[in-house]
Length: 369
Image: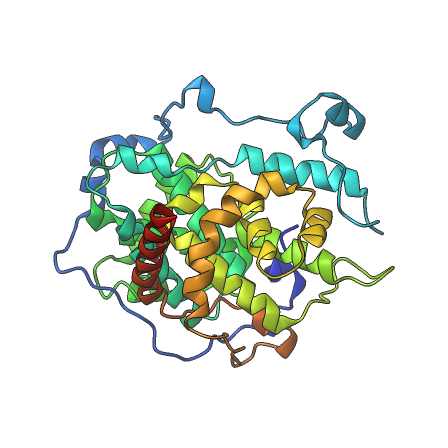
């Protein structure tokens, strides 16, 4: 149920981007990107002669589903997708059909924190720093939340297909993922030159274009996942709907939604968030804001399905609480009714050390019991 902001708004409405200070990130040492990704091999990839994806063992392969399969066949297959649809009646389609396709997409787009094992020179904190910087860039260019979360998904899935990537390559991969995501989601995405600019001269336009082709081939051009924020928005919309209202017409309070997304942002920066499906992660965020009965109703997930993630998320909730409530920001040429959808940045890297301290204190308390 991706909002696809670029297809719902006129190009003229969001054409000029807000003029704000764009965060540059400059590496001390200039890295030649293609040499770090095994230039010879990747040249074959660009020419279409080599498949850049690594082979995944059979036990890790995703559950594939035929989207053309009749809904009755899918429900009769005994698959885990067979839960009754929590979607309300839709004027434009079958809620059961829509729900099955959404959840099956979750199965098809795999992510895993195990990619760290394939990159010994990369630490989890490096991923956190990179994603935090991409959030900054997203706010500077007034990109939508969905754009950032698409970039995060592309990055994690791409890293799962590669091995032995050096830490100096992360910025190039990250900004390229954001470049691809902005072209997927935004009505007026930032120009290539703007994406190169925020790297402070570390990478050039042609290098981003080369990396774009490598990433697209590695992902097999599968660029439309249901992200964590798209699940959260859908859940909160259903929880806020009145009788006979339209699912596509926003009805939730913007302030509460911004609170939820800040918690989700902090969680997604942590590598352990990849232990959970995006829909479970989003449902767990919702559990900290509304009653459990309503969460189960709008997500189709039982308490047993979400409880491990809810418990894991508890220190994040505490860390976010120390910084008070976030405020809605106004952006030039962004309508008031759309401002909550713009990705905003806060001091997430300060929250993470506090989070570690909170986890330590909780562990000590548990040991004393």
